[in-house]
Image 1 (tube, rainbow, N blue to C red):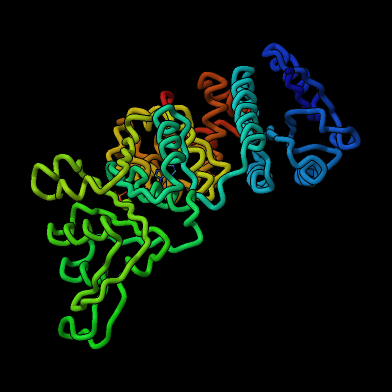
Image 2: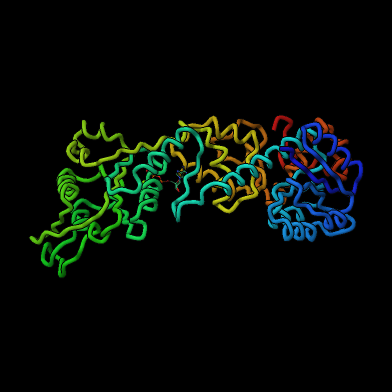
Length: 439
Ligand SMILES: Nc1ncnc2c1ncn2[C@@H]1O[C@H](COP(=O)(O)OP(=O)(O)OP(=O)(O)O)[C@@H](O)[C@H]1O
Ligand SMILES: [Mg+2]
């Protein structure tokens, strides 16, 4: 199917340039030099709108608002000139998909269109597909490794089978446990999390199983345990190998027959609770080290292994995009150079570490485009000019100057001309932003 693009720019030469560049890539391109005229047409026949933001006959933001009202699904790429940064930010907040700074090369614009079309295709596929399972937490990743995990999850979710989840720190074990619960018919019943490693041994037993009055000093009334409070739901025992052997034996008895005896009590109670446990150490190793009981392991019907991020790095671009969105930075992009650095990294802290890196990056340098220099220290390449802290708008300006420098192969007088500033100003900005030819 041919992709139809509409270009709007009051400059006829710019329109021609885009028509030429994009039709070469196989797109069908129409152009308008008047935005007002374009608004009278039926734009739903287009797959993409590329528009200048500064137009003589209508305010760019006003135009964008109207387009969104009438054709909310139509992606818009803005073409922005130097000096229109504030308007650009506003436009992005209004829902424009992306922006590209003038001047740009045919290759740059083709790459951007291709990316936007890919994202749109993905969205449409998602919309055509099954509706998301009710309230299930979102896993991100489309690699074969992750798809494999989803299949296993789907198979075991809606049963009472006990599940042992193994995986390194930050791989998504808790996310998996929650998904298991949400995807089961127990979803309206409690999901109780117990961080076994964080609760002192003596307390853990009474927390889990409850106690009767007088069971120990200070037990002035009886209390039900967490297992009982998860009745008909799921109890998630995190870091299960931190449990003492004695407590593991007690848990084993519960898993065998569903019976509970509160501390200091004789009455046998029943709890229909699904047990899901997690360990971030290799359980087979823990058995060898006498840290985990082999007989308890056999009570787990299913073992799920969550792969570390370094084994499915092909999910990184999608993870970055989705996590940025989740963190509230939907319009932020990772530059190819920065993505390369992320790809080369080993990710010992897995998805949680990635989440932290993105959060930290956005807090320290809240720009629309993440460059290698914006990443935390451990990712950065060696460079000789230290980068100053920049304000958000300056970050975008820095990018715009850098793009223009690249377009002119670092010819400073041509760049200054393009940007409409004098060479002295350009030089001071190059210095201020620490721009380097290989950066
Ligand atoms: N595949 C994934 N897609 C989206 N988010 C993920 C994915 N994997 C992990 N996360 C997110 O990363 C964070 C860490 O996940 P989670 O707490 O489930 O890890 P964990 O394995 O329990 O880690 P730990 O062993 O340190 O407790 C969470 O915010 C979770 O939502
Ligand atoms: Mg966890």
